[in-house]
Structures are given as structure tokens and as C-alpha cells.
Image (tube, rainbow, N blue to C red):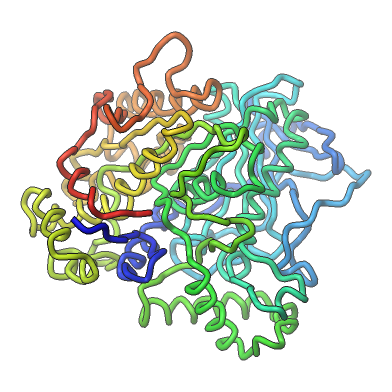
Length: 540
């Protein structure tokens, strides 16, 4: 069978049609709740911590110390717009960090954050059992949202329960989104002005550098940082694995439902950047004018560009670009590792990632085999037949959605696991839990469903929803299992803990995969027939 270059994110021109699927699947973590939770002022106790930039004052949330809205870089506005994040100046003042900072400017969308936004958005939040000098593992969360929406202040990502359960320090961040974070500048005019690329990823690296310098003062170990994220946050994790500037800033990585192929090639990135300039009425030779465009106008132009992309192309969102600087190679490239690249990786997907996006209301993905046809237009007939015949019931809807889930999420993650396991520890999982109500609705184990279980946030508004679809006992058991696995990975570099090996490393012989369900268990090569059907369809 002839190798086909079939990439879910459309790195190659040949498979443009798959990009619309990939981009559409990055929003669910904001569907459940997007209203940010602000500081709990029920406790008047405060903590003052000395950082290299100055003192910050936090507060207590029950027994967990919390610092919200710590600035990790200067406001990327004015002359610093489209520039790499700059270090914060030192100060002798005590900064109040008891409320979240501004969210990144983002398109108006019912899934977007409802919190106040501004270009001055480079803030992070910390939950710690105590600022006591103890060296605890650090879990550094990167939010999802298709690189166009979201924030680290989403209540789904409140780190209190995770920090309390695992005696770990949890960090969440904001980073630049949309055009402010992911335009592509390549010409001499842009270089002369100092405009830079992949700014959202550079922000993530700057936040990691801040953590490296300061987290010890908050009770964390700067040499024991694990990055984790979901959806676009998972893709960010995978991108950071390939980013040279991020080497040495973390020792472990967890990618939840993050298609590792979500990157633009320079040609595609340049096309949309130039279109964005034309929407603003700015000539490529007069890019200095971009510094003075009001941020609201920038976001309106981004909305116009996205509408154009949806109507006329197979793209939906902004993404990182292989720019030759921050990202010099494809994430799938298995190069001979350097001494700092032996980073342990845990990654996985949900059983029914695509169901939410194929609903009649959202219309973000094909719902039947006829609509799926265009996604195979550039695949050889023998490959198409081999794939579709592996899914029982095709062309029925369930099989169509299973194909979409595998094409966009599961198979790319398996390929990344195959690549990384050659030189570093890799652990694979699949989240399969669902409920009667979720099954009846057709959602099943949809994209993002694992997040409240990982963070242990089963109280408040989130808990009310969970209790409609699961018993309190099941929520506690499944959440406890997942939290402990994530915590163990952050502490020991594997999800087992000390003295056990229930969850074996992934390799191409056994393909060990932990199944999280009503009764969690380790499986070998689950759905092997479907996986093997993609063997002639390469993501490299």
C-alpha cells in the first residue's frame, strides 16, 4: 500500500479537508462552564511570598494557599505587541494577588471566557499546601480552546483539590490567543520591527521560566515540573516537547486529547496572516500600524477572518507554526535525543471525542458517511476501504463518529507514543466512562469529559452536573483513580507510584493502555483492528 500523507491538522496540502475537523474539536473544555471563579474572600488570612520580582500577597482557600493573578511577564501591549514576552521589572511593593488577572483578548463566542479581558493578560495562578520551603512536585496546566478562546481562571481548572490530595503545587496560566498570539511574520519589514512568531507558545515558555525561578518560594520544586493540558492545551504540551527553548523547564508531560499534528506550515500561516492584514486595511510594508490598532478592532478582524476561513477554507482557528525558530521541526519527528529530551510522557484520548461536535446544533463535524466522503477525497481508494471496513456498522453514524475520533485524536496520539517510546518513558490511557444519560443523549465519553475528574472538582456547579449523570460513589472512585495517577506521574515520572507496575509503559509490542471506566483496567492494544487499519496512512 502506498504511503499517504494524511494529517489531521493539515500539515501537508494533500489532506486540507481534515483540518476543519481538528480545529472544531478544541472547544469543549469551555462548554460546561466558562464563567471564571474569583478569589474566595471568606478567609481573611493572607500570605506574603518573596519572588525575584518582588513580594506577592495571597490568601487561603480552606487549607490551601492561593495566589491569583501573578504577573509573569510585562503587558504585551503598545511597543511590546507582537514581541516575545519581556521579564517583569523588580518592585519593592507588595502586590495583591488575591483575584485573577485579565484573560487574553478573544473572539466573542458562547464558549469563550466571560471574565474581563485585556492585552495585559500574562498572569498565572498558584495553589499550594504551604509556602514552607518544602520541595513539592509542580503541575503546570495549559488551558485549551483552539488557541482562540479560554483562560487559566476557568473554574474547571481550580487547583485546590488537586493540590490538597497530592501535596503538590498547581499552576495555571493565561497566554496570548488568536492574532495576538499566532500571526506569522516572515518578511524583512516584520523582522526590522522586531515582530516575532508563536507568541502564545513563547508566553507558555516564559511562564515556565518564571516557575523555574520562583516556585521554590511557594513550596514547589523547580526541578520537578510536569506540564499538562487538554485539547489545544494538550497540543501545546506536545509542541513544548519539540521546542528547544523549553528544554530543561519540565521533567514530565501529560497531554489530554491533544492532537499532536495541530501546527501550521509557513505557507498556510502566511496566507491567513496576509488576509488578516487586508481585513485591517494594513499594507504588508506598513506593519508598524499594527501597533496602534485598538485591541477590540484586532478581535473584530479576527472574527471576520475566522468567518472567512469557515466559509471558504478548511481551517477554523489560529495555531502554532513551524517557524524555524521556536518550532523547527514536526512534532512527530523522532530525532536522536539530546541529554535533556528524556522527558516522560503520559497521553491519551476519550472514547467518543467527536460526538459533541457532530450534533445538529453545533454542526462542527460530519454526521453521516455522505458528509464524511470529502474527508477521504485525497486518500487512495484502497486506504479508504481498508479504514472504513475496520469499523463495524459503517456507514452508520456510530462508525462515522468512531472514524473521526480515531483520525483526529487516537491514531495521531498512538503515532506520537510510538515515536517517543523509542527513547523516553511513555504511558497511554483512554477515558471510556459514560453514563445512561450521556449514552441516551448520544454524547457518551465526549471531548473534555475527563477534566473535572482529573482536577477533582465535583463540588458546586460542576458537581451538580456530574451528579445528574453519575453516583457520588462512582465520581469519588474514578476521580480518585485519575487524580492519583496524574499525581504519581508528577512525583515519580510514572502513574503507578512506588512498588507497583499495574500501568505498564507503552511499546509497539504490547501497546499497554490504561482504560478509565466504571472498572478501570490495563488493556493491550485496545481496538487493534481499527488501529491496524490506519497503518498505511502516515502522519509523518
